[in-house]
Length: 351
Image (cartoon, rainbow, N blue to C red; front, top):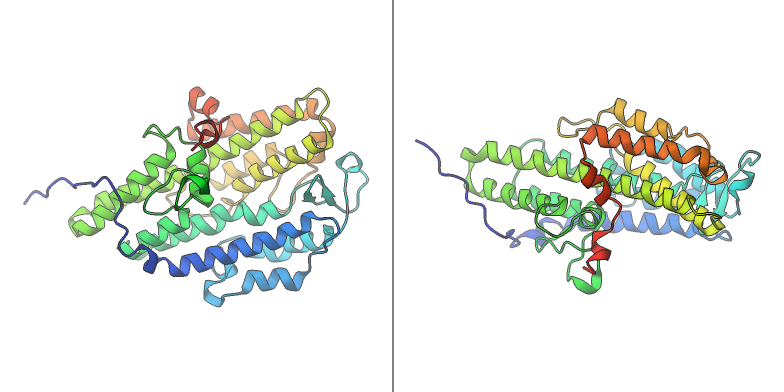
């Protein structure tokens, strides 16, 4: 008997969403608490303490940030937290990078001695290493309606799919990956956010329709993961453009330099989060990740000085362009897409 074509509704069913995602919301709250704690180190008079960081990391037991993080747990505990503690409570300037033995706060950013913004490894690195990792874990053992709701919450969206992180414009503004997918989406029905929404609705419809629609379910899951990955990489390219823009000024101010190092650290950290995220659903390979990071003088926890980008931008901006070109090659982004990635479409469209 030939099965009927899967009917895909126009909206996502939200009946059980709140109940199904209580544990995810608790996890998100703990992640936000950890990020907020790390950000207190952006004040040079504040000293971060390892017991406080570890408490925020471990609180919640099986639902702690640590327990839900993937491959980067050891990096966070053995490298990033130690660097946050060591470099907090001090000031820093990248112009002294060659002789600096320790980092500190510069322009409101807590940097290590090589001018990398340390907290981004945990924060933006966590978008792939925790949130995307957990979505991939949920797929194992079979996808259920409850798991789909949990995946949606981990993505950072709500069943109403606001397509904006702006709280004034939405009852349930987008967070995390969904926030950046919205920024890369022109709201014309063809962008990453729109594709992810469509595939979540398709995934739910296929699950409701039964085992005959396993192929449709598998395809929808694969497509939504790919769109999430591409939206994160598009955002990485966006932050690279922002870095170039600030450092291409005739005379960048110290705040320009601090903001450029922040942008570059975010770009690096988004990619870093994919480092050991081993899944058949992830397009970029570990070798390709290493190639892109090396172009930006970054080797995971062993990075080279980033202050060269602010101290000698003319000689170093080409490395950022090379990294963008490599990502374009990996994902086969078109010239038009690369140009579109320069923009925050939420801001442009006042969404």
